[in-house]
Length: 56
Length: 316
Image (cartoon, rainbow over all chains, first blue to last red; front, side, top):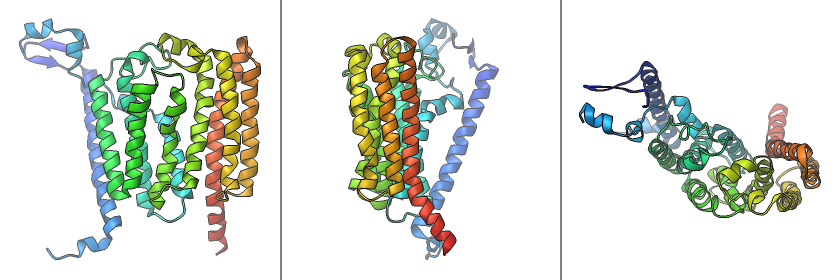
C-alpha cells in the first residue's frame, strides 16, 4: 500500500502526505507568483514605461 | 468507488492517485547538476556574444534555457524509468523509487518544455526558441528514445543536445547562428564522448545490467580507450579555435592549449593503464578532469570578455 489509509469516505492522507501536499502547493503558488512578476517585468522591458501611457 | 472496489485495485492503481512526491523530488527530475552546466555554458554564450541584450531579457533567456534543459531531463527520466531501476547510479531517482508517478513526470516535463520555449520566443527571439525546442526534442526523442538503447555511438550523436545551450545563448543576443557559436557547440560536442566513456569504463556493470549498448559493453574496453584518446586528441585543437579565429585572446589560446594537452595526458593514462585499480583510477581521473576542463575553458572565454570590460569601466 502507498501509505494512504482507505476509509469508507475515501482516502485519508497521512501526516507526511499532507505535509508534502502543502509544500507542493506553496511551491506552485511561488512559481505562479514568480511568473506574474516575470511577465510584468518582461512587458516593461519590451514596451517601456510608455505601456502605462495610453488611452483607455 | 466503494471501499470494496478500492480494496480490489492493485498497488499500482492506488499509487496512480499520485501526488506522493516532495518538492525536492520534482527538482530532482530537472537533473540539477546537468542543469548547472547548462546554465553556465548558456550564460557564457549570452555574455560573450557581440551585441547587446537588456539584462532582464538576458536573464530570461538563461532561465528559459535552464528550464528547457530541466524539462528534457524530466522527459528522459520518464522514459528511462525501467532502466533507471536497474542501475545503482539511478535507482534512487524519484520515479524508480516510487515517489513520483511516470505520468506526473511526463506532464511536468511537457509543461515546462512548452513554457520555456514559448517564453523564450515571446520575450527574446524565435530563433533561440526554435533551437531550444530542437534541443529538447533531440535529447528526449532522438537520444533518449532512439539512440541510447540502439547504438554504442549514442552519446556521440546525443551529445549534441548538451552542446546547444551556448549556441542558444549566442542566438538569444545576436539573433543568428554564426561560426563562433558553432565552435562553442563543437567544444562541448567533442568533449562529451571522452567524458561519458570515462564514466562508462568505471560504471560498466551498471550499463551491462540495464542492457544499454555503451561502447565498453558492446565493443570492449580496449576499443573504448582508443576512442577516448582519439576524441581527446581531436578536442584539444578545437578548444584553441576561439583564439585562432580571433574571438578569444592569446591568453585564452595559451591556457586552452595547456588544458588540451592535460586532457590528452589523462586520456593517454586511460589508454595505457588497462588492468585493475590503476585502470579504474585513470578513468575516474579523466572523468573528473574533463569536468574541470569544460568549466575552465568556458570560464576563460567569459574572463576574456569580462576582464577588459571591467578594466575599461575602471579606467573611463
